[in-house]
Image (cartoon, rainbow over all chains, first blue to last red; front, top):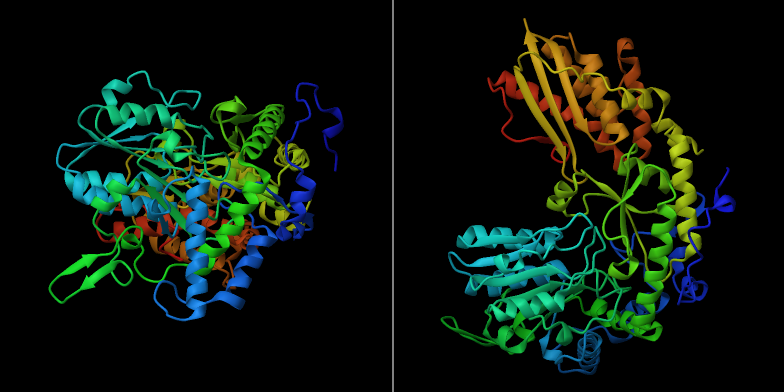
Length: 425
Length: 159
């Protein structure tokens, strides 16, 4: 099969990668898998990241040596399990900018964190005529709960539009965020466009109008240093599984005063202080929001993921991804018929790169690439309103992480060129 | 190139994809049926003009991948001019074939055999199904005396 790596135009320079991807690849056993006879080129980390051996081992270690239920048992294993679970909470608190660990609530994922906020805070605070502001680039997770809440409360849902380049259009922001705004809910990094939004600036603006702010950090926390105190946000939601950790675990950070004033979300064990048949008092935060037995083993193993990321250094990870994103966008631009969505400047975006082919549907792209061992995502990426604005029914998306390098991008480019030849376009 | 891929993207499929049949709008639509694949965003609009119990003219407009477009195009070619009952029987047969059942297709439906290659790609089966479930939905509503479907057909509830 002919490839074009040798006659590559000189416009795209070799990426200066900050991470030792050869060593990192060795830490991820799944990357040794053969997919349809090829080495796995995993370019779908925005959907979920792969897991390093240390995380996989931490799950095994918990079940072999520490397994017990937490917070209740009066025996050694229960104490060990509780300590490990609470240790992860402390490490998360440190990871997102040294917040108070009691402001860290474990959820099943970013989606559940946002739902918690919509049901608990939203139910208690949103009234008829209030305004909720979102953006046009939200994932359904940070869209559907607010659409439903607004309908239920007869509140008004307003949205910040996007520009042709895939940035938020802030030209009329003073008309969108007003004294009537109760909540601004926006993504920190778009899962489709890759855009990194000016969360700190918009939070300041919203606070001046008396609104509270939730940022959806599912795509941001895995890829850059995030300091929720510097951002100023009131709530921040993200998922473990997109940042090397296990599935089934997420985090909702919230400011203490707001969390304390909120009613619980799920009812049951752990979230109570005193229960009578006619009256119940709630436990302290964060336990008030963690009813029932949580995903203990995966919370404990999440700590190993945080350690792994911290050892690499979040700033270095960001630099690595900027360099590789620049390289990927440059090389994708070499192919006729491809259109890249979102900002073209790598510094202003993350490594989730959506593209379309003028002649070939994203599903056909994805199936073809899969036969070469290349995993990308194709579809609407849980952002149907954004797709309509972009005028696409779907896009293909290659998304990068710490284990990706130029060779992965080259494999993608070669396969896309083969694909266009195969489909005769 | 790997063989399963060639099985799916056979020349006949690619021919239907590049020049889909059923593009012509119908004069008056007795049946209007929309279909969508919520998982991927593909959308399909179907209109049928009936005459004396047969599908006189069928219009299929599919915004989707090669497989869903080609499948819709084959549908238009094959069911046009057939009596309603026969069209429904064929649609049901194709649906069962795509689900993996071992069905014998009548000789005059030869082209449809090309869709079998899709079965090696489980995530793509619903692409091929979309137009057929949209037709089934439309015909059922027509028999109940409705022109428009209340809700678009999806491949989800038929699986």
